[in-house]
Image 1: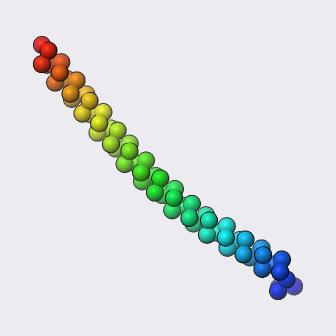
Image 2: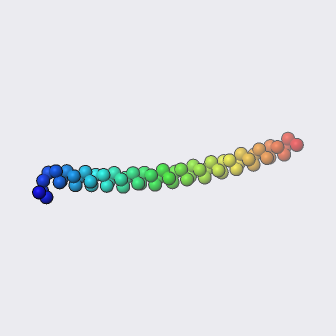
Image 3: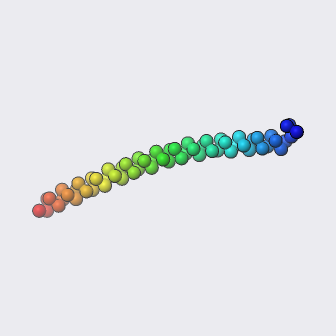
Length: 61
C-alpha cells in the first residue's frame, strides 16, 4: 500500500504545496519591505512639501 501511485502523488503534491508556500512567504517579505520603503519615502516627501509651503508663505509676507 505504501508504494501505491496514489501515495506518491499525494506526497508529490504536498511537497509542491510546501515549496509554493515558501516561495510566497519570500514574496510577501519582499512586498512588506517595499511597502515600508514607500511609506517612509511618502512621509519624507510630505515633510518636504510642508517645509516648502512654509518657506513660500514666509517669502510672500
